[in-house]
Length: 112
Length: 113
Image 1 (spheres, chains in turn cyan, purple):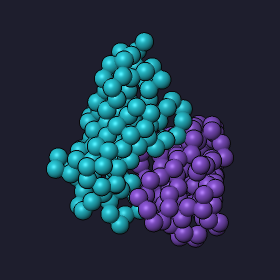
Image 2 (cartoon, rainbow over the protein chains, first blue to last red; image 1 turned 120 degrees about the horizontal axis):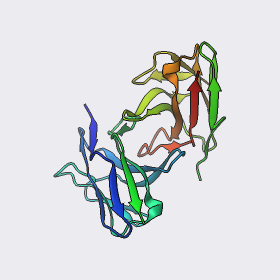
Image 3 (cartoon, each protein chain N blue to C red; image 1 turned 90 degrees about the horizontal axis):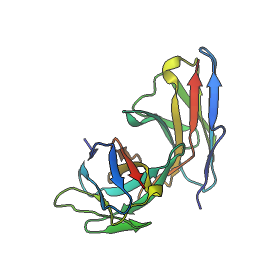
Image 4 (cartoon, rainbow over the protein chains, first blue to last red; image 1 turned 135 degrees about the vertical axis):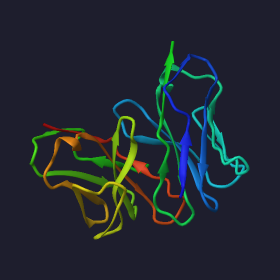
């Protein structure tokens, strides 16, 4: 079946550090891939998406590239801020499916 | 912008009570979803609906039911609340055709005493 595996947290970094959160997936066909962010006490917000191989999604300084050869969609940011502290979820939508498959989430804490 | 609203941010109920959680979206989306979120378990799909009066069970439907009488509104019902249903409940919506990106509400934190 379809699945998403993301790196376990929690992840703690200092402000201005480089961030990578790994995400790999298993799916048939050509899924769409998403990163969602959840700030404390809130619902999930779509951070970025990519709908075909080699697409790069980007938003708020975050980037992720859809790599079909490695079935990966790693989230990166060059210089994190305290305000980036949140839980990040990787997700996929399989072709023809209405539901999303979510990873377990990675809690990120940025210290000043 | 898509807006998904949920009727309460925080709710406290007693064991055995019937609980209604309401969700409304304003973008004419066909699909609506109810999830619960628990520490260490991520998001788990309870029910979803792809049209008025249509519903499908998700991964953990036991103890829950849903109602969708109008396209914009999707209700989650706990027939007889139990303490193990204490959780964060998230509603989401999406278009039937497209890339299936879901838009989430702010969540309802339910505590059952």
